[in-house]
Length: 255
Image 1 (cartoon, rainbow, N blue to C red):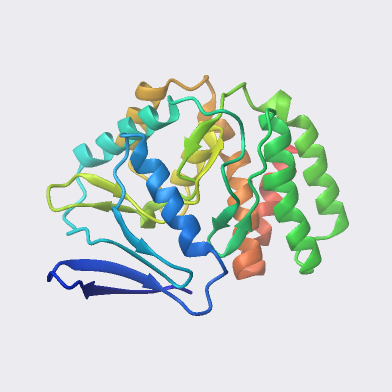
Image 2 (tube, rainbow, N blue to C red):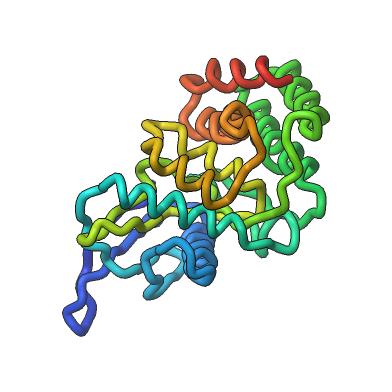
């Protein structure tokens, strides 16, 4: 688990430091790359990266303020603008991490194959190896993978935050949104928004603004649990059996 603290540089400027001697190799550099990629789009705001090494990440310190309805609406519109920027393929420039779990990002033209193999299949195999799922569950994930073209409308690849839950959004002293701790890849925009409905969820104003900005196909809310299965499997692998029932319920619904 990463440790967090505020530090002061030689010029007396307060910075945010994330460090952990036991962190997976490359995780801080991967996070810095994700923050930089998001910032380069000119849509969502991220903390500026000051320095990164194998064992720490230094970013600007965000002076936090209060979340407001307008702030959430702004974030929804910004995420829609982010998702409207086309990307070359599915995958990413490098592999990275979702939490502490490696996240493979090979570049593919087929979004269905990418999500089936490198999101659901990958997490399923990790869970099988750890004794958290059985072979029948892995077969169910394979069936779901084959059904994806029936269940998910065509979506071109967009840059995703990748881990956008309530704990990864800050609001600065002026109430403007800032996103942190990304697990970026080029994927389906709806998959990004699915995470926003987990673990406390975002206010309805956020979802309305995203819908107005990006314009998803009808029925997108009904598809959110399908994308959430990736994160349920990841949490099963990270934290154990408490997430097994939730993952299997989604699998049973869609496979």
